[in-house]
Image (cartoon, rainbow, N blue to C red; front, side, top):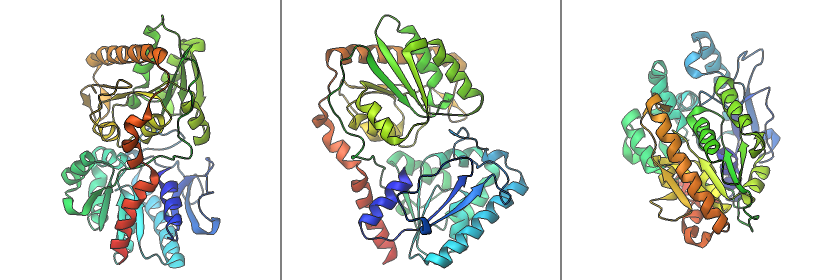
Length: 389
């Protein structure tokens, strides 16, 4: 969504764009935001790259492999495939500037291939996790990424992490944030809160807090609610989440992965959005839900705080994130407390939604306006022009 938004906004401002990306041959790819002759793909699960695409998260909503599990042979295949496509794209398009995504391997490869082309990279948060998890990749990543001209960060907290982990000069890191699509995500009159409509949208995995969300809802059996469980995952964690959800019977509707247009419709018809993540960068889905008039229940992660601020609004509940290990795993002894905190917050917001299903978004209009894609790109456009000229 971020890449699509950048290309759409850049096109509106008169920039020409060319896209290079890695895709799985098993997945459909939306390309209506750019001309077909301005795209080059590295395709996985092919003769040339015969393995699942590595995910920037270890659990992706499609078949994937983990970077830390790649063999040396697979790493070489990965590098060679992107090198070939990148060289062909630059030869064909002759860019004045390169904007890459993730401070990870492909950005490092591209910076080394084209040291004289102005180079900007957006950090999305999952690259920081991979950098900490895959120690054997760090030197390879830093070799090119240390030479990048400008880093775009999602938040001030992320900027501090980039300085700490990558040892970047703080002067080359600019916080630009991220945005949401105002044409899709907007508020309209909510339905009668009987039942109160609750929505979760994200990966079905432990790091998103889904098992504890479902356990908390199971304990709230005397109030009338319905959960829309949206998203996909893979492996045992996904199956574990689906098993919990099915135990709640008709009170849960399971969707899997859905298009943004359908997600926006469900948000507009829902009263409460819950994101109990144990780790996040800058969660755009919180902005999308807020703009759609949903009450919000989130963990107090730095990226979430960047979105909602130090909010005292009654329609936003921020609960304490438990102490974690391995970046996003919950200690066994803290699980019950986390579940109870979620239960209390959900119970409160259900009661409030019954009294007042419609929110006054004028209270947060300034916050929402700053996160429109047009506002985000206006900040990035200044960086483009500074690097090109």
